[in-house]
Each structure stands twice: as C-alpha cells, then as structure tokens.
Image 1 (cartoon, each protein chain N blue to C red):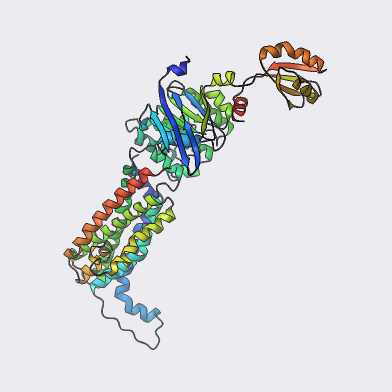
Image 2 (tube, rainbow over the protein chains, first blue to last red):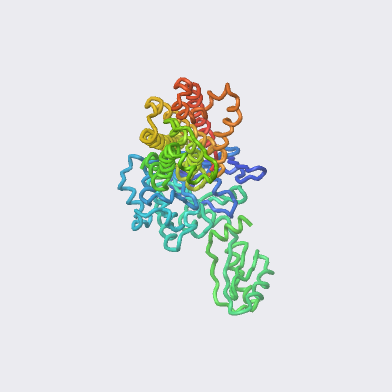
Length: 301
Length: 252
C-alpha cells in the first residue's frame, strides 16, 4: 500500500457526471484526492478539468453522482484560470476583501505578506484594472493563499505567466505539499510532473488514469530505447522494426530513433546485434526516461 | 474589507453614487425654476409669434410636479441603469467566482448590494426633492412640510421597489443590458396594463411615484397611499427572496 493510499481522502467523487444537453462534460468520474497531496489534473482541452473543479468548488451542480469533501466550503479556495477582479480595487483591497470574507480573524498584516509572496509587493496600492494577465494571476494566487485554505483548487495557474512567474508559482505549489492539499490542473505536463505527486488523467470527461505519478510513469508506458546514429536513421528504424522484440521504431530527430521494446531486458540483449545487422554507425544508446507527456499521449491516443 | 465597504467603494470609484445624486439634484434645481418662469421661457424661446400664451400663476405644487416629471422619466432610467450595472452579479464570470466562492451565502451578497443601491437611489430622490421643495418655497411658495415629507418618503420607497426589480431581473438574466431591459419591463408594464384599471391603481407601487405631486396639490391624503405602500413592501420582499433563490441556484 502506498503512502498516498494510507492518507485520508480530502476530496472524493463517485460516479460524478455532468451533462450539458446530450453532451457529458464529466462521465462517471471517481476522483480520490488524499489529504496533503499535490494532485495534478491533466487532460486535453474540453476534457472536463474546469467543470470538475467548478463542481468541487460548488459553482456548478453535478447531473448525477456524489461529491464528498473532507473540509467545509470555507476551507477551500478556487483560483480560476483567468482571475478577474473589480478594476477599481487596489491589490491590497482585493486580498483584504478575500481575507475578510473567508477569515475575518486573520490579521490584516497577512494581506501584505501574501502579496509580497506572490511577487506583487511593489504594486500593493495599484488598482487591479491596470494589471497584466500575469499580475492578475499572481493577485489570484495571493487572494487564494490569504485565507489559508486546507484545499486549494488551481485551474491552469501558470497559463498567463512569464517563465519567471511560472517558476515562482510552481515553487509555491510544490511548497504546499504536506501543508495543504492542492488540486492543480494544467496543460503543461512537465509542470505537473515537476510538482505533483498524484495524477488524474481526464479524457472526454472520463478518468483514464488516477494514482501516484511514479506508478503512472513506470507502469503505464511502453519501455523504449533512444538510439543516436551518425546517419541514415530512417534505414536503421526500418531494420529495427522487423525485429520481433521491437514494438515500434520511429525517427525522432535527424539522427535519433526511438525504439519501443517488449521489455528492457530483451532490448539490452538483442539491440547490439540488431544494430550491427542494420549496419548502423552508432553514436549512443540510452534508455528512454519516462515523461508524463509520453505516457499521457499513450493513454489518451 | 467588508461587503458594505466594497459596495461603498463601487459607488464612489465608479461615480455611480455621484451620478445618481447629480441627476436628481439637477432636476430638483430645474423643476421649480421652470414652474416659476415657464411664461418667460415660452415668450423668449417658444417661437409663438403673434400668439400670446398665458399660463396661470404658478402654485407651490407646480414646483414639485415639475421635479417629479423629470425624476419619473430620466431619473427612473438612470436608477435602473446604474443599479443594473452593479447588480448583474454574474455578468463577469471570474469576478462572480471570486465572490461566490468566498461569501458564506448568496443572500448576504444580494442583500448587501441591493440595500446599498436602494438606499442610494432613495437618498438621491430625497435630496432632489429637498432641493426642489426649498427652491419652490423661495420662488413660488411653501408646500406644507408634512405633505412634502410623506410624499418624499413614498417616492423614496418607490425607488427602493425599482432597485428590487433590478435585483429580480439580475436573478433571471446575466448581462447588464438584459437586466436593465427586464427591470424596466417589471416596473413599467404593470403601470400601463393593470394601472389602467382605476380600481387597481391605488394598489400598485407606481401609485407611490406621483404621491409627492398629488399630496402637494392636496388632491390626495396620506391614507390614500397605505394600500400601495403595503403592496410595495410585500413585492420588494418577494422579489428579493426570488432573486436570492435564483442566484443561489445559478451555475457560474
């Protein structure tokens, strides 16, 4: 039993379905989010990520199924993908309003602290109407953090940020592990791989995989080897594709071939001979490192 | 920052509060002036060459009537427009998300915002009426204070009713323009349909709108507005209850 499985669940759905007319935006989704985890919700556009987060936040009602939350609504916060605020409020006022609504007992000094944490320390008294999308995203993060929620729902929090801002938000999300639970949806799979310990893959409203990231990376992908040759990668790929232990052989770059194999052991044993028979001028051979992107593509293909 | 302060800042920084006040005070200034100097205005600008138009000497009630005629038309539209802009809770989904995921109940959100705009509209009407009353006293003569006070209070209640209709409309449609049009229909349609039946008229909220004029003229008494007051209060309460229910059930 994994550590995630031992922790109590903070958010759980059973057969959660949301239909708009005849179209099911969510189709019998069983979500299981362990307390203290950073859960990455990934899926193509229109796969139901935002709908799922909205239902968890209480903004939409499911057509059928159940939602069980281990915290009160007041102890959870949703950061939408494009947060917007009254343009005539200052950054301080936005966060202070959030503080007063969710935790009036939280001291006002906390407002300044979270604004500084979110990288808005220099614009505390500027009105939100003049903010860029990235600044609005940071303001959204600050107004989410100020209430010290037990469960944070973050819908594409990096979508509008520059590389530096994205790095800061990823660090911030990663730092929440163990302190609070975060459900983090993103299109950027490398971000999810970097900060999340648990992953849920949604496709066309259905949960295609859910579990620890490590299980996903090691248990759900075809093992592969990356072969770099001096020339004629196409010819090498064609030759390798005829081998019985090879499941696929595709040219990735001008001189690089990805060889999908039935097992790593077979590849280690058979590959040198196969390359020799193909007359390949070998530069390097290395095992393919698991990436969420590849696994995601394999699962959703 | 509380929701009350949020609405106060909205009134102040978007100039909605000043705008409402300015409109009614302007009509309060212009109404008695036009009542007092209508003869001179027509003679100078009316283009009635060869025709002499003689108006009867103005009486104090004329000052209030002139104020009301503007307040009931342009003033009503401005109140509906300003309130619709603020009470369209879900016109911008992401702003709505910010508040809806943080307030403990939708009722708190709806009641605070409606109360602030209803109070502002009522105060703007009262301020305009007070200016009109003072100017009428200075230029034409005194409208009895008790009749002025009751007429003003009934008129202010009418604008509270108007804002409640805006809240109800905001529960039915999301956009500001749609809210404005629907609220206008809620306010005007009963007046031009049921209001044509003379027996029904004293029961309608619209009856309160002209109370200041008829009380100033002495053609009605305070007791004549009790039925409309009771119905208006009931309609306000019902409209807010329905608005809260609709907004509570709306998905964002």
